[in-house]
Length: 167
Image (cartoon, rainbow, N blue to C red; front, side, top):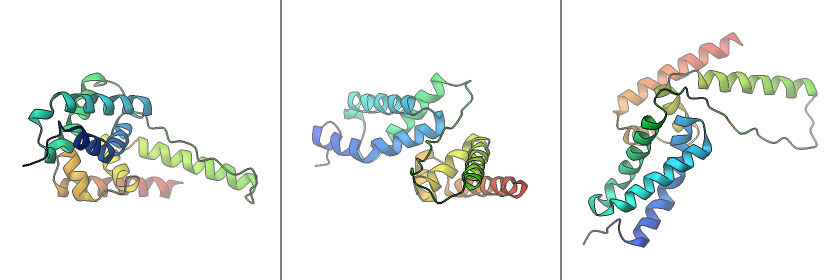
């Protein structure tokens, strides 16, 4: 007998497996970590409510689709801005102030370049580079073909390479 998402232990397993990747995915879409957490929680609440209708093997797709649709409905006309947490530097550093300044400027330029990518390219780039997802996994999450993912990644890398050459 197949396991049901309605069983509490199965639901907890689905949550522990998919909550963080869903938050990360929504963070790439919104640029707001708190909003990403809210979208994740709403998606899991809907999964629990609809658990009898959702097969266990479709739960991941259901969660990502619900969260993405909620995002699109709530912020359809809002521009997406990405913010990355600043990596804390040690109090003791061998780097010169000039090096630290140049590093901070480069990081800002890189973040700006990534944020300026079209949304589809940016999402694919970050899922690949930050979450270390394969093209196949990204394609499943975005409900696109692997070829479409490859094309988006190629365009993103080409754009970032051109931006880096200007620096």
